[in-house]
Length: 399
Image (cartoon, rainbow, N blue to C red; front, side):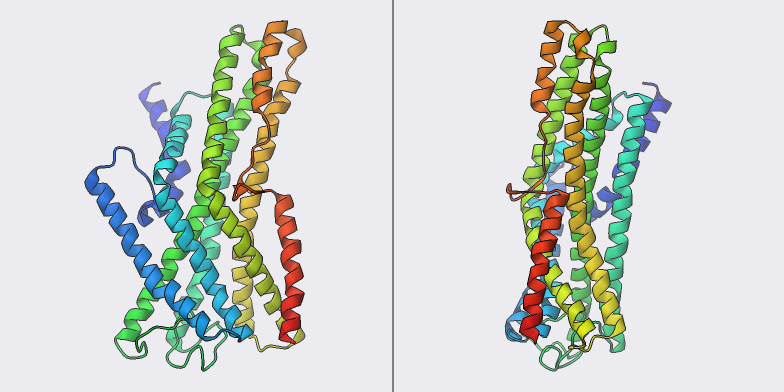
């Protein structure tokens, strides 16, 4: 490969991972090859500091507040709007940090696939899949930014998007419903607490979105490789060195299957938590919308707009899990279909028999939630129906 061509290929690779690498590297979650002990120490130190800021200034105070207002359903729902996403983001943060060694081989695989020789058609497939992942990333950060800016800035001007009572907010307003063991209303404690709470929210927002977008990058890359594998399998009968080409394709297929299994191992607990978390929030938001429409609660237009933005945010993220899982299943089945489309009947019996290796390996592969629920659109629809049933229960309790 000449220098100019190598530069172009490397530029493609850099473009494909740039957005995800920037976010995860800032959080200390982007693994590196040949990381020195000092670099590892600094990265782990950054992660520990960020986790402590988030836990002590967001997670613990919100849970403490939830315990104090237990029994007041509207105040509890207002609290859970923040407590659940923050807790979920912390879980994602910890899992990504713990699984850095498992993530590194996947990143090396992506780099290898981009830098290895490929046809124009194969490059176009990879570009299209990487562009799709980039679009998901940009959309995810945009929606998260909308859901973050207003709650963290309005309290400065004496306004808020939350459900306010004297019990939850007896003093100066904070971005989220919290309860601290010290008097947070005094200066400069108020300003320091406000700043650290905003930093914590921004941190967890970046973790929440960055992790999901990274998952889409990994899965879409594998899907692109499966598409290229399918194209090569369909044209197997056109090669004179059939056995060697088939052998390379089988090895590539096994490599992709292993990468899918690794991705599932890394994200399966996150996906299980996301399903339960989305189910609870879907019921909560449904209750709030129902309350607004039946005029049982005083919900301002601005707060209702914020609730809808938050709902779109969690809906889009959970739907993303199931969409990429569905696409992955389709691409895995596509390899099996490619063997069927191949004119195997024109090959010798030994060559045709060797194709069984691909057919055996080409079973549908799923991303799973807790190794139990397949992440598909069917699962997503079932989750919506189940969560929707609890909305009427909450509304009845409100009445």
